[in-house]
Amino acid sequence: MPPPTPTAPQSFLQILVNCDNFRLPPPTAKSTEPLVPWLLFPSPTSPAVGLLRPEI
Image (cartoon, rainbow, N blue to C red; front, side, top):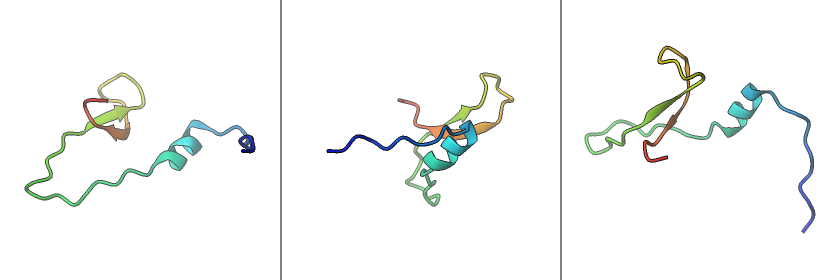
């Protein structure tokens, strides 16, 4: 197996764009999965950059 091909350094935003594959399902009465916002900084007023399942 060949080794991985190196890539150019990426910014934090470029990494987020590449990893953003999560889609919220359409809301239904049965889909009540709790999700927790992943914040850019620990402050509660910080922008959310993603959603995590609480058990992670």
